[in-house]
Image (cartoon, rainbow, N blue to C red):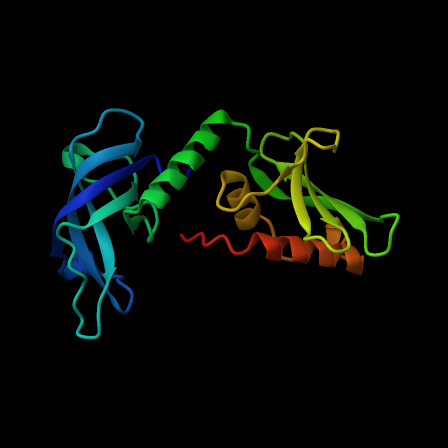
Amino acid sequence: MTSPVIVRATIARADRVRGAASEGVAAGRMRLLVTAAVSNVLVAPGAMGGTLQWLWDAPVDARGRPPAAKGLDVIAFVEAPGPGGATRLATRRGQQPYELALADRVRAIVSEARTGDVPVIRSVSNGFRADGTVPGESESQFFLTTADGKPATLVVQNRPGEMRRVLVAQGDIIDESARRVAPETLLWYRLACFLPRTLPAAAGAADPALAKDWRDAMASLGPCGKTG
């Protein structure tokens, strides 16, 4: 997880920031100083106070007015707070309207991250493709580099009349233990957000069929939506 603190909070007030502190705000945005009461801590390195403050570059309407923020229930992804609860959003989209489905998804991803079982993907190093025994059947295997050096392989299976299967195998043996990549999981995020959309030349892009399987696999994962 990129954010050390994730909380559910209710915005108590949002004051416009002016002068030098408002420099760098994008067009169509207004910088607000948000004061929020924490109602639930999803992730934190230790004990926290009940109030946090952060800057939010809020979108404005056609009249140049920001949304009514007071009373808004949010999930905030923030840095570790300093004295008095001062912090900052971990990314520009670090404040999101609270939704139960979002909170459940965050908890699930945090739980996955804590197990250490999901590899941290760095890149793709090589790949090969083999045709099956019937026309239209094939399997491509792409060897991934990981942060801890342990093997991980992206497997793309094509079978006539069936949806393409995208799986990840961990370990030296690629067998039935390879798992499907479920959307909006930590594994999906690390694949969709940190692998190139086209196969690098060094990984076998000269093979058109292999390169197509890679593109199709990345397209099936979809965009990750990661922002800075």
